Image (cartoon, rainbow, N blue to C red; front, side):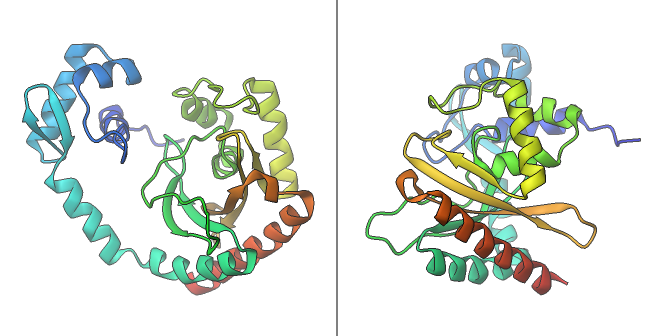
Length: 250
């Protein structure tokens, strides 16, 4: 039997997930509108998160991340051995592919970038560590979705409702399920302009000894460079990087 989740903890992290480098402040209205809460419930969560130090309020009704989040972020960077293993491996892959390479971990809201190595191209696409990516329109997200049960997928997709981000985004459950079946069969996922019109990406899973996915690796760049020949090369190189990560973690 699956362990029952604590809904308040999940909601608290969904609130924290509303922050980004572009949105550094939120309000009760933000939480209520985007997470489907009443204003009273949103205010109660925000007040609680402020009391424990996860948020701070420097003017009435406006909240930003608090000191506890900064402390935990610094501690994670100092103590997480996986990031130190992953970074040189994805850097080598980035050099070989001449494209940016990223490793992500799973969250209910979407894959979280845990390490990234930008390409050396004069103009490149970069993603900051800690960025949460859409789960239904990115190569990394679709890898994670392909590993979930139908119930878990429904929960993860609920926040997005298969929102159309570009003309290429898959917007129906039947189409998405068909693509997830294909991903499970072929062992990799593609994003060809589904999240950003000019962005392409290839992603592969990284399996633990228990045959469970614990990371995804992806390479990403301008869509025009992601033809079938490059995809084949990228899949081979990313899978080699995945094997190196596993070998260095055991």
